[in-house]
Image (cartoon, rainbow, N blue to C red; front, side, top):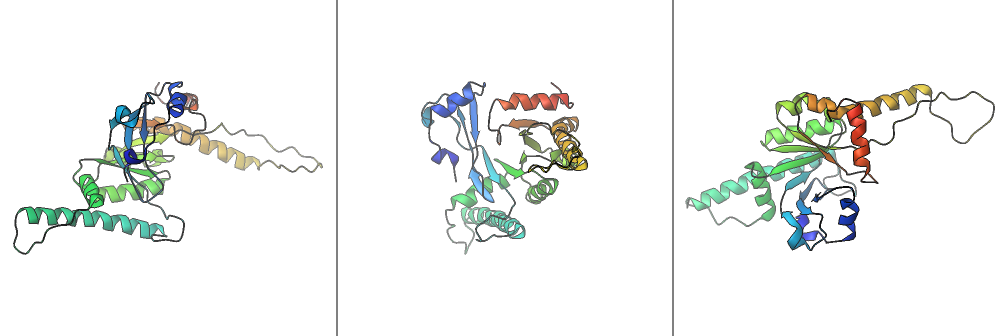
Length: 257
């Protein structure tokens, strides 16, 4: 799937971004194990043929169990399915090479745009971007990437700081989502006989929520300390202007201005 083939020009959308200083959009398909290829456009609001900056940017993947009961319906099945697709792409290239070399007994290879797109990844002509948030999701993505020698980016990266050593070792970039939300408040429940519908969480639970929030906000500084290149994604934010607000949280937590 090519995002450029489905993207529609909407003058209202660019304007909502422009007022916050955004000059371009990177649009990626998502929601499948292998979703397709992204596109880069400017925020002028002009027709696509005039605003297109890069027709094919990154190929997006996510190792998860899609809903709906169709194959692959488990994480193991999704991983096996993607691995098989990449192996098929390797065979597709070998078939084409043998046919081009006029090897006896080798028939004409098929034309398959999906396998051709995967072949570009295998030959590092394009980068793969994996949606991964938790430590285990990131490790699974890196396992596949290393098995097939893919140039990889992690997108999301809520717990990327937990895998900083491996990300740094293999020079994996991170596009970090910074939809941190507001800092959780810690307030001890007040004792009393009056029954209320909304009961506060126990103090230890509130403190744990604050610790987790602080760890995530400080995660960007931890990634930079490990010499990992990062970019910032506005995905998940209801108000795009909150990008700057959340960046200030990260700077207060140690990220270099």
